[in-house]
Length: 132
Image 1 (spheres, rainbow, N blue to C red):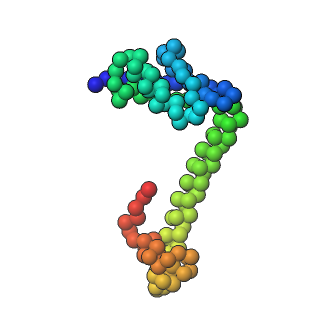
Image 2 (image 1 turned 135 degrees about the horizontal axis):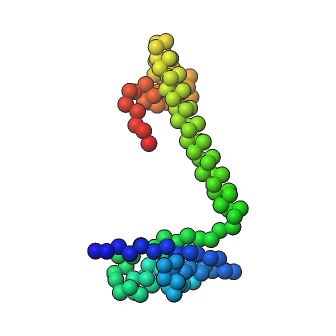
Image 3 (image 1 turned 120 degrees about the horizontal axis):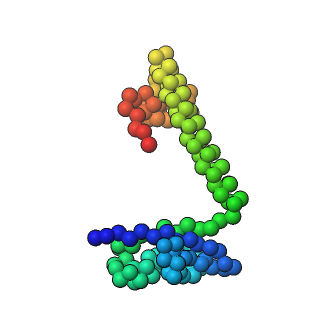
């Protein structure tokens, strides 16, 4: 079963989106909301190619203002920075838990000192940390 993949460009017009297939420009549609674009173009392209819909994949790419792209790129960079900071914070919290454990504090005291539950304190001391 051959998979047909298409990229479509979505351009905003007043109160609707004009969707056009990049590979087959004659294939186009108008939708009110962007979430309707992929299913509608998928149906149209499948009918045009005379293949089942499950053999057609559509990637809809909206045309957005430059300022939006700038903000999205900044948000992506900030999420990466936040992820690194969260990882570093987790490492330091685990280290603090291990130091308190070596000092002989109970799990409840470690949890209270770190501002977490005693169950979380136990997890922090566990050698098998689940990574997500």
